[in-house]
Length: 282
Image 1 (cartoon, helix red, strand yellow):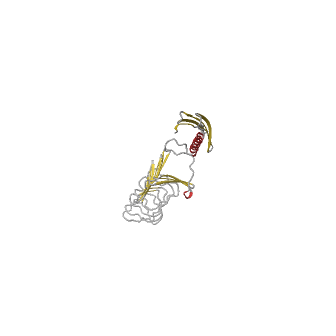
Image 2 (cartoon, helix red, strand yellow):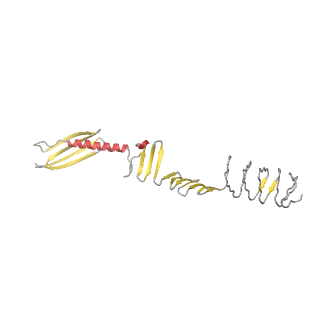
Image 3 (tube, one colour):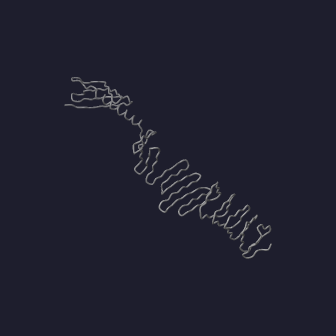
């Protein structure tokens, strides 16, 4: 079969069994079947192309729809100027980079990064095998090695149900629906100077204070020296706010004008106290 030179039409050849060499343009008006097509120039088609063999080309431009019923393998760069719709599973064995204006989506073997930037505000998502980071204008969340850090440039709010916790430069605020106060549970006993205290510690302090008041009340009821006597000894009992105390003490008139007094008390809260006094009269 002779080669066709220039712009030629080979009539009557719809199934050419031998080698067909075309040095210029090739126009096919009907259906053409081929076991292999090797093209090094431009291949343009206005209709459908159905191929069951191999198509090898350095550059492929598709201006209309393309349907691939089998596997599509691309070893070089691929540029899409329009929409890509994938209805089945997609496997990417190398880097995927999607960039539109200030928005980028980069997936490689070790990480995935998505950045959206409109020139004023920027948000990003970075994922690796050990770290997940989500940020927006300096605020965001980072989780790595079992620890999660939430950062807000002005404030951070954590909400569960109707309860919220607000962290800001002013401190930490807990609130319920409509700003109502909420109960904070599970607080351990405070140890350091700036630790929070719990209700149990407050109740312990209340018992100690009440016991101290009961002891003071008991000590004030100890009798004084009777007229014409030089000494006295007494026992007294005090009770305040469910706490009790027992006191004992005495007084000695050293001279006609000087008296010495002393007392001890022990309360139900386990505290013991004492007092000594020296007085003059004239």
